[in-house]
Image (cartoon, rainbow, N blue to C red):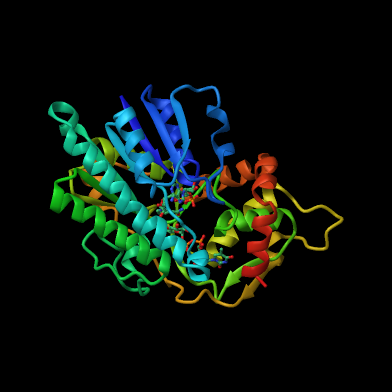
Length: 355
Ligand code: NAD
Ligand code: DAU
């Protein structure tokens, strides 16, 4: 059998495909537009693997998506494709509307047309799994309980508003056309192959180059960090055992303020990559600087993942210390990957964002 993954050259999608093909013989069709965030080097270990078939396609290109779906007849479509960086959505929201809303609508349409044409077992087993985010629920105060699947949607950035719209469309395709959908809302991921515009890889990259570590505002915003492979195992559990039409929250049970996260990161860097005599600083902590806050910055995210734990028997494996150690070691050993993604276009973004 075959699964079709969109956005499989991005951070989570590529980790998902690598993990999938190390545990299964099932073919993966990977469709990705290869935006600045998509990178085939993430999938370099699969170059000789015939079970991974890549197409450079926009999920909004209905004609090609339909052709590929009809040709490969996947038993499931897993949608990772998205514009994913909050700061870029504040800078230029339109691309977020195009991919995260229009693109998802068109993909749903292609999937629905295909599913309606199936019969028997193929129709029964087909699933459309939409990978979404905890940001759709908005921001929590310090004393509020963590987000459950029934929290009201209150997105605060163009990114989260576009993801919220896509979640509603996914739900509507189930309610209106019967398309067998599943939705996951996950907290902040970290791990190998994350593009160094997001907090953790940006700070590792900057620290190793002895550049400033720019904390937005007071640094007391809280995120609930999850190691990327634990997100992948949760998606697998939802795909195989989730109930059609249901939503599953996925989280790390690991709330940290940004300052706590950066403190752990700096301690591990001091241990794994000690600063030598020629630099004036003794610890990477000395690189921390405070800069203007992100507009509309969500104060706190926290996920209540009781449902997926109880109903689907899912548990994360990594704790923050083991996950961060693996992540930092990966970035230290993959400087070529980092050099290749931090090209001219990347530098322009960093200069503008942190000017
Ligand atoms: P990413 O930005 O690293 O990767 C996104 C991928 O989608 C890239 O390969 C890009 O080329 C591709 N893409 C973008 N537009 C496309 C289009 N129109 N057609 C086809 N491909 C397109 O993102 P990520 O961090 O891997 O996130 C993957 C998904 O998980 C997203 O839907 C995101 O909203 C969600 N999510 C991310 C996190 C996180 O912490 N990173 C947490 C929860 C949910
Ligand atoms: O919660 C899930 C979401 O997590 C995903 O849906 C998004 O795709 C993903 O990008 C992430 O969003 P965040 O905005 O939480 O992640 P980011 O890494 O951009 O920022 C994490 C925190 O660190 C946030 O409070 C902003 C802060 N930050 C970030 C950057 C890039 C800084 O203080 N300085 C920075 O330079």
